Image (cartoon, rainbow, N blue to C red):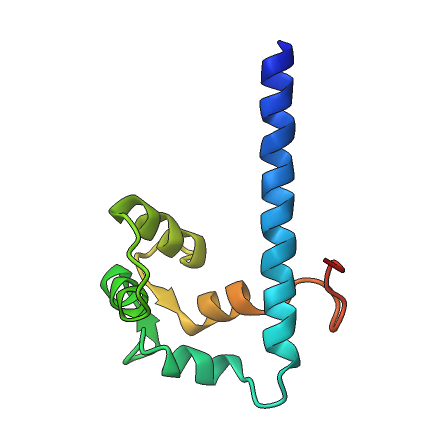
Length: 110
């Protein structure tokens, strides 16, 4: 492996770790809000009328919040949430993605 390849590999892992730390800290902050409930967030985000969200629902949600992902970014986002790859995001899928993954109240400290 060349020096350049090693450096790119290292930077890739640093970016992945940094992103996960940031995401987990956000999940922890949300979870620590006294009135925050994942079910309410799922319903109020209006990505679901029947507890299932599809790619168009995610596009509408993001666009309403002035986020305009490319089609590929949108497909990648939905596939990250859609654990059983049925083309829809259920409440259970949504809950898994937005709930903290480290022990309660213990983010990564950044």
